Length: 342
Ligand code: ATP
Ligand code: LTN
Image 1: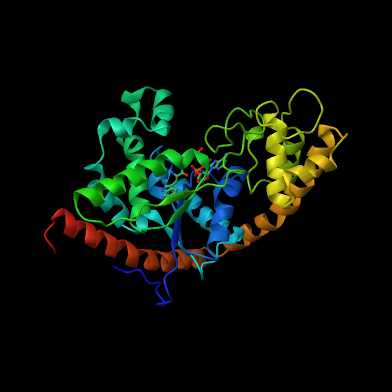
Image 2 (image 1 turned 90 degrees about the horizontal axis):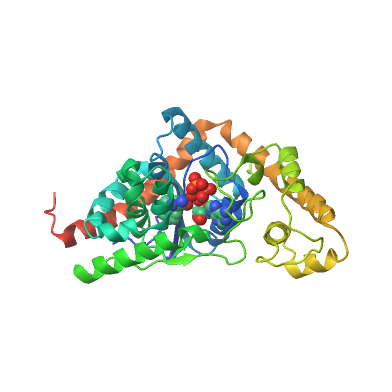
């Protein structure tokens, strides 16, 4: 069992997470809810971050589009601050153990258990369960395999992934109990403040690549002027008082959350400094903060995309590191379930 980093440095607890290449650009929900924590955790943990292109295959994207979005995702992760010297950044489909462990875990998962996953229920409700793919149904089991292969201590994600993390822990426990202790039970790492960034036009739903209208989502690679305009036209709540109250004032509270996360100023401090001012002042200032943040990010991403060969080299190096860990775990699993060694 390899618990050492490839350089044989003393092992630090591992952290692992993935993001789907389902659009040309990440959005502020992805960044504030998840990937910003990835950047912070790489300082103190042994980090594994991957682009979940197998999950993203499920809705059936054009091959060309999937390939391009995979590279764009890698460029954005690096531009955000994921350091390939420190973190293994890799593409899920390059590590066959993800698919191999999925089968073993599928044999431990109840049909009813999988059917209870809210993401499956929500996504299959649109066209009816009969029209949904088996891939949509088994999606969380592939996610469990992604995680358990690396035996991470923490999995930094947004709130919408909590249920998948619970299934992952249940499957790990079941395997450990039925065979032999093999998997570490991972803890979700979900930051309360930014766990659910809301759609700017409809604060009743989360900001999402697939569900938000263009006006509801601030993407990281939009023209900064467009992002500023979206902030200025965000839906705000009745009344005019700036106050943090997610129940009564979800729109304004969401803007305060984004503002606080990007500026490092506390929500209380922001609320105090806008005392007596209207929504327009808050939106105008937040628009400036957003422009200042996305402009260099966008420039860095576009620079990185100019050298595709280098991006692919980084991903190959990440896959090598990941492969060492994944193959050792899968070998333990195959041995413990009784597969004859090759
Ligand atoms: P889709 O709409 O295609 O499901 P998504 O926008 O939800 O995509 P994912 O790739 O599924 O994005 O998510 C990547 C990470 O970002 C996950 O950890 C997820 O929990 C987090 N995340 C996504 N949307 C939000 C949000 N609005 N607020 C906080 N975290 C989020
Ligand atoms: N389902 C996740 C993406 C994902 C993931 C993972 C996240 C796939 N595998 C493993 C954490 C760990 C989503 O964000 N929709």
